[in-house]
Amino acid sequence: MSATIVLRGVRKLFGQVRALDELDLEVDSGVIGLLGPNGSGKSTMIKLIAGQLRPDAGVVRLWGLDPFTSPEVFRDLGLCPEQDHFYEDMRGLDFVTALTRLQGFSSAEARERAKRALARVGMEPYADKRMREMSRGMRQRTKIAQAIAHDPALVLLDEPLSGTDPVARADLIRLIRELGDEGRCVLVSSHVLHEVESMTREVVVIRHGRLRAQGDITRLRGLLGGRPYRIRLGLTSTVDNAEGEARRLAAALLGSTLIEAASIIDGAAVEITTTDLDAACREIPKTARDLALTLSSFTSPDADLESLYRYLVQR
Amino acid sequence: MNQRPQPPRRAPSRAGAGAVIAWASLHLRRNLRRPGALAAIATMLLAAALLRFVADEPSSASARILLAYPAPLLALFFTSGVLREEVEDGTLTYSFTRPVRRSQLYWARCAAHFGPLLLAVLPAVALVAGSFGQLIYFVLAGAAACLAYGLLFALFGVLSRGAAWIGLAFLIWEHSALRVPGFIQDLSLLTYVHGLAGVSVDAGILTFGLDMPSKPVSLGVLLGVAALSGLLGGQLVERREIPLGR
Image (cartoon, rainbow over all chains, first blue to last red; front, side, top):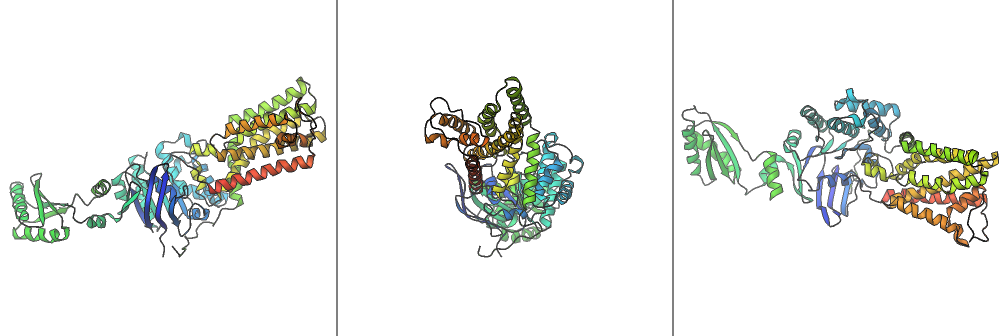
């Protein structure tokens, strides 16, 4: 079965600037984080998927249809654009109702759906405020409400958390996860990496308009073979002998050809560097057991999204 | 990509005419509340009242003035930015991502902008009419002029950011064409507006041999220009990429 979103060889030029270049992408369902530095082509990609732009080369398909020429795809697509623009004179509820009405629902049903969507984003108490009287966070939540009021199968959220306070941000992250859990495809662009990480493990990384990586964060990290990979080992030790035991473990691990470097962190933990993650993961517990040491933690600073992202966009 | 899986059918496949009319109605209400619209309506009524009761101009002369100068200018003011203002406000994104043809949204926007235009022009030309017969033709000519100029200027707005300047140049051409002898006069929309209103064309001393077009011909030409401009504008909006937002 074809994916929900398919981009094949997509190129988009703005004058001499290549916003997207030979971009191939398939996305099916769940929450997908769209990552990339400023100017990498994230918003251009979302606009192409939302049928607001037409590719200069290649094809964009939603459920097999061209979004630029097939307005019927919008019955199941909700877009929360990045720009903070509204009909400022309108009340929040009227704004969402009017756009939901344009989806083809009757006035009464559109209003009901608008109320539900506003409640879902925590805007129910402020639904009668005019857009120009709302804070940035309220406007952002109203924008998300209009994107989900018609219950779309595909939701495109361009920087949805910008301008929101921490409480609203946590609520919206929960909402985005719920949307994914309900079986929708939710494509979320953001440059705030830990927020994306709290929404999903599936990411798409683009840079200079090209796809740099796509997939599960952990799996992607595993595919980066040959790159040094850091592992931090904690030991179950008393305060007095913590550094000594850490040094013993570090020295033993350095004797292995798998370990390229080892260092003591905070006088109690060992950080090793390896290029063969799987083999090192087998070797480390064995070495610790041989030294009669007990490992209390086994983590990698390189497994988080931040380091993966940094590696992908800087290489 | 040979398979064409369909999305879940929770929503209607395409929004119907009711949704588009509701959208037009929403924008009509918003447009009518704007200070510019209210000022235009008031100014036109005041101008008509001055022409009729203070200057004591004959009905035909008053109608000719109102139809030749403020009506096209107001059409330019109200309709040349039908889409442009939404592009500049960044709000077009919301309507262009709905299951409605872009051309329908364009026509809905045009209809919403005709509201204040018609409300400014039609009562004014009705006010200067000297008889019921004149009133009918003045109002008909006013409506046809608003449609023809309005949709033409809306088309200019789709074609160019400088639609207001292009429209102004077009209006200068319109008045200049009336003062050139021969068939050139037939290329001016004003000829047909005046023909439909039944008022003589104030063509200046250079004009000779100008035949007033008949009312059916005038109506046909004005409606033809309006229809052609509307269709072309709709097609352009449908096919062209309109830069939305930054």
